Length: 367
Image (cartoon, rainbow, N blue to C red; front, side, top):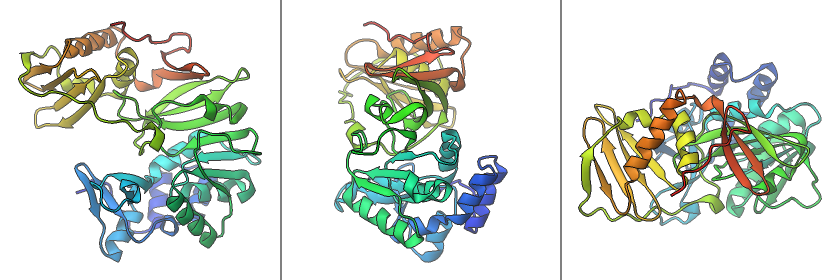
């Protein structure tokens, strides 16, 4: 069952966000004016750790909508016969509030949203800035049509488009702000080019070791962008940024003692550092009674699993766990910096993670 605090009404939800310091006075009025329930379809699911649970009954539907939880609105890209993987949602309200705060919009700004979803964020931006200053693009035509209907019914008519959000919107020109409401494996420079110099990009990223991180980038005169990581963020990936699972041969395995408790590897600060040092290495985990169990994998078939208080088992080529432990020792020697000391730079050649200063790029391990 979800551990999210139950909220009786939408007004209670907004008050909760304000009490947590996530809404200033202006955004508080905007959230009050845009009920979330107007942007949630009748058929929805709750996201649980092991899958999606259908929400049956008006009371349960309303309780979920008025809680600080994401509401899953589509499974399996709408195929109807898939494994039940969430592919579209109405985002967690506290995360929406955080991202809109980081966007730092001002009167007169034009905003581009990547991933219209249910239309809720587009409605909030339209209430704050006016319809004519909000542009939102959605790849899935069925999701886009539903969002358009919700927006019209609620009295909003922002500029909507069905298509690939990475591609420039013809005739739009540079916008002042860009917000992505789907997780990116990397920030395409094509997105940065759609924002004027001095503008801001806010996006959730999901990269290998990273469990999900929010970044705010300031666009520079030379067309690059850089800025800090601003905490964790969990979003469904942009379709073009999805990845297939690594194929691992789990037969046999080599045992050895763990040199570091795997539970210590689960901070966002270490995830950002390790993700930069060990590109292509993925980490997943689950909590245990004594700490945590982790799995690390690499595309060449290397893998390792470790549990608090137990041994490590390694599979495939190389010594992947030794690579992880060495990276942990480096991170520890740096003083275990928190996620707020890391940042990202995006150029036309790619993106680089840095520590404390954009010039202090974290280089990948050479293998």
